[in-house]
Length: 377
Image (tube, rainbow, N blue to C red; front, side):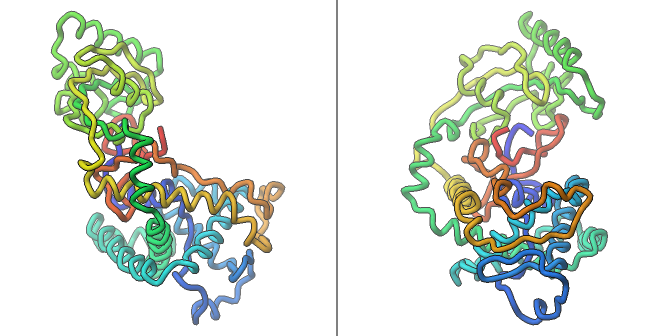
């Protein structure tokens, strides 16, 4: 919610979709016996390859497997057009990847599968696949392609690129100790509040603080931020870039030390904030994880640039099955822009890793551990 943090495997997978814009399925290399056996209709052709209807349907199943809330969009023409264009892009890019990237992609895909099974258990993992009529090998192929493209793009990022990104976003690497009370639009029992009710409670809490109330005790009593509530509302020595709620970040960066803020509105509700300390982190003090997260973000930017500037050049034809909403489908590339690949909110990524799987999904206001994807929220 407030910060980016490695979490359960479903969050890792969704990160691969939202942060790195990968919503595709196919083997790392096209062709082979599996392709020859697929006699279904060709729904898209591009420079060097094609996508069949069966492949596209499998892609849709994997998207639903990773993020069930997307199921409601699967029959929308615009969404299908968007998915097939992403599939084209990443099949093409994986085919152009270096042998080293393919080898590393295979290795990391296996690691991701192992982590999924460890997180939920073998039986539950199989059941989740069965629910979508997916095979483990199909998911593995997807992850191989994802990791291959990631590795190939990340390899193109230089140390100078990383340093420049750091210089342009120094404030994201500041380290701060912050006290926080969130009065959410959803309380700790998942009961919804109106903005008016949340603000009323926040003002009351602020009044108690102004009268000398203990911040820690009030946080334990009132806060809906479950990641800090039991700790008295304290985030100790956090990298500012880990917080993805922009209004919160601005207060952390600008609020005078030891001053208690008025209620600060965000999409989560109202926050009351006090900053104990903040200090810069020199470039030579960045952790390897932080540098690798910068590398992953810059690699994702390269993927975005390809989609925006080059995808239209390789697409020959798209002929998707008709849906209830056929009027908006087409072969243009106006929908190839990709969500959530910005570095804001995930640049520092201290809990992330070089495989780009260090951030999670956007959670509810009652659980800051269900963290943002770093898309600048």
